[in-house]
Image (cartoon, rainbow, N blue to C red; front, side, top):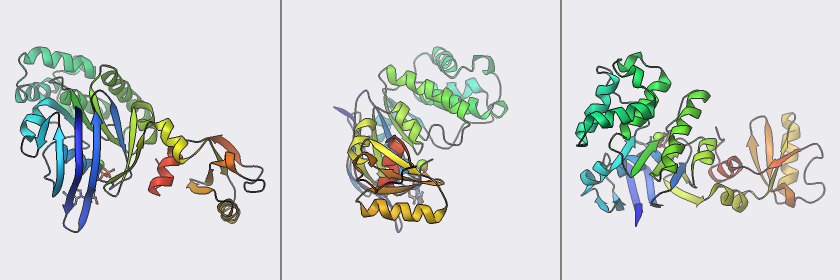
Length: 296
Ligand SMILES: Nc1ncnc2c1ncn2[C@@H]1O[C@H](COP(=O)(O)OP(=O)(O)OP(=O)(O)O)[C@@H](O)[C@H]1O
Ligand SMILES: [Mg+2]
């Protein structure tokens, strides 16, 4: 049985179709990275899975529970880490955890809080108010709070958005630990590196739909090939190099100050300038080609 099964799911907000006939299956025990640009519908998908939003059409099944009818039972078995920090700033670190442990009817609240504090490495800060914590500590607490009842399935919505690189690496370690323990993870992100490092499989989402899915290595070989050639220089030169490469049937994408010519191993003589910098094809190439958005 898949942990998550969505079929033909639609969610509209007035004129906006945030989720547009989404099919998504997440088998148990994997970390699936939902990779998509801003506004792709990632958070809306998460909110449908938690019962915080109601679908306009489609079938949703989570851990064997039909949604939205059984969303309460499904919620009890999953852990949720929202994109926006919604910690209670008026109570201490440990009380934030204890409140959730009671909400989830964890039998031994004290033990659950201690376990979560260890996970977040916040034992020494347990009696501090949340607004005395650093940004990274708050983020670790938010993650630990979602895990306080040891769920089999966890939804992480942009777990490291807006964090500095050191904190991001810390959280990656925490998420990597969960993954190796066999927890099923659905993680949305728009950071390519996050998906590449943590996800067993990546589903590329744009405009409310999954447009491609697979192991990062498979996605790269399917959509980008082996090598990418980057060309640097003044805009006129890039325009000319792009036109030449495209005339030879190659895909080209913007890459900051450069252009990236994808699948350069297949290029005919003269299709790519001699001074192009050739590197291995990347998931970023795939993301930009498929979504038309520059990656972060
Ligand atoms: N409550 C709402 N009311 C109206 N429109 C909404 C609401 N929630 C989401 N939307 C719209 O639905 C679309 C998808 O939004 P969503 O938050 O799911 O995207 P996302 O992939 O999570 O993006 P981001 O990477 O920026 O978090 C957007 O156009 C957004 O403006
Ligand atoms: Mg979002």
